[in-house]
Amino acid sequence: MNIVDVYTKLSGRASFLIRVSRSRKSNVKSVLFQPLSFVEIEADFRAKSSIYPIRNAKIWIPFRSIPYDPYKSAMALFLSEFLYRALKEEEGNEPLFAYLEHSILWLDTCQTNFSNFHLVFLMRLSRFLGLYPNLAHYRKGSYFDMLNAQFSSTLPTHASFLSAEESARVPLLMRMNYETMHIVRMNRNQRDRCLTLINDYYRLHLPDFPVLKSLDVLKAIFD
Image (cartoon, rainbow, N blue to C red; front, side):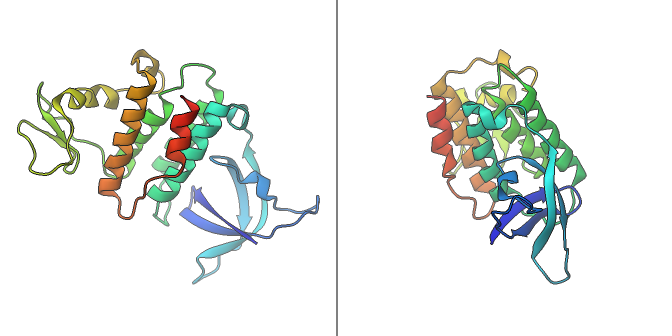
């Protein structure tokens, strides 16, 4: 038996039970449930149950490149772990589902200039979780207060803030989208720093959000 966690269009996050079978005739194959994969599921939703047996599963939208590209597959591994930790609601959220669908398909079909994809994905995800930074009070020389998700003209009284130099990059990064993100040039160290800060930001605001195991894997693959 295997348990998989899936973000569904109708019910938000849900856990499903897979009966492991080596038979080619099995209706459910665990290989279908790869990081970020699109799967169409038929399951028994039972009252007072938190894990639902799957009757049938099949690929909904087949991937073109994500499983076969080492950079994209590393991103998929990291983002699937991130989403597992960040998405807890057990109710439908169609705008969020549409965002995830659009983003994953964009990565799968993009051929070049996707090195900043995971950064843009995570920054824009914050809007759906109610964590989008308030950029209204940014002024040159101000500090980004990560704890309160806003800019401050004076040093915050806690340690969770960015220097004025790093704070100046936040509005620029928040305006990036998938089509324009290649314009913002970053070397490996700058990209790793952004990823670390984004991860720290989520850890400040989401209860029990850990240091992700796949974070170092993602950094290493772009080394």
